[in-house]
Length: 333
Image (cartoon, rainbow, N blue to C red):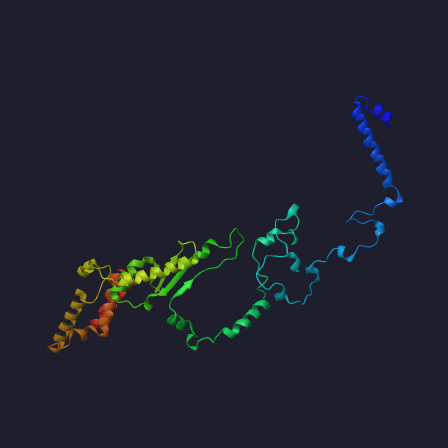
């Protein structure tokens, strides 16, 4: 064996040739022992030969849970609460994602897109019905006094409007879900003439004259609760400021007002003087008071025509109404 090593590796030193010969001899001895029938080992662990027979039941592939579910199973018991999508528990051929190679969308197995979004598998009609049956014992009958929308507006005049969104995005919070809108009929507030006019000046175009509705919208805060508190704060401040009377408001003259006021105006004095003159010409004297003249239906119609013409402008409708009221007041119809 040493001669063979020296002939095979002539360039190596004598010591290295001796070591190679020893290792080569050990390798041959181990190979011969492994080939004897008594030293043969069985198949490696985890691997099965064809002649080993059928696999044990523990090594057979398991059937997915979704394939073993019955059609009439109790689904609320399978998915009782909100949870991340699990393909093994949903017996539906759900697909989601971008189609690969112009084919169909990826199936539910290993689909991360289905795990990203919230699902409503826990809010099936059967589950909702069960929840309602449980909550029914805590509910009371609807009040009989709130059968109509008008009654609800009378007892609950404040209306708060918010919106919820279902979206697929990096956050579950939609940017517009924070917006809060508050609506209130101005007639529901206890305001005198001064406070009402001042409040209308403060709110500007947020007041709808046709429906008598005040609308306040808040969206500057990042959360809905913050915007709701802000709308309540704005309504409170507007109401309190409307009732305040500043010192300079006592010196306002009719020329400083933005709208025409009939009470105490020259138009009221002129119509009272005209009615008295007509009665004195017809009866020789006039013993009626100013309040009786002002409360006359014809005078009230004339008053409304003058107010409309002063505040709304001299349109064709206002001029025609003023003309009809004057003719009726003078008995020219």
